[in-house]
Image 1 (tube, rainbow, N blue to C red):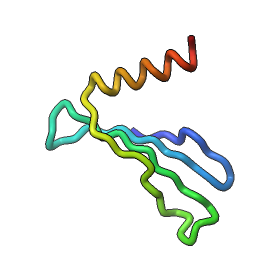
Image 2 (cartoon, rainbow, N blue to C red; image 1 turned 30 degrees about the horizontal axis):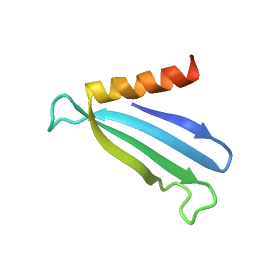
Image 3 (cartoon, one colour; image 1 turned 180 degrees about the horizontal axis):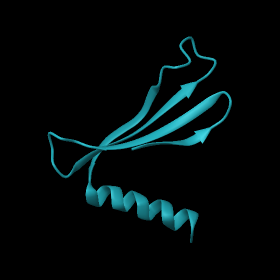
Image 4 (spheres, rainbow, N blue to C red; image 1 turned 90 degrees about the vertical axis):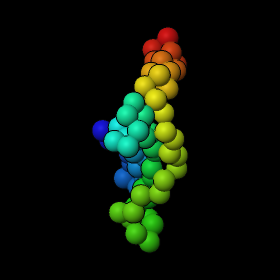
Length: 70
């Protein structure tokens, strides 16, 4: 699954979570950016990529929930 987490006319951050077929129970979590003023404005630049298990994803969700909806 993929979602834009910040989008303006010129700049976009996109988050993606996908299961890893080669490692059952593991997920790839990444954040990439795109800048409209770049030489190739359609190219994404990887800002973060980590491999997490389900517990790691749930911990990330709990952290976000605690900050956004205290």
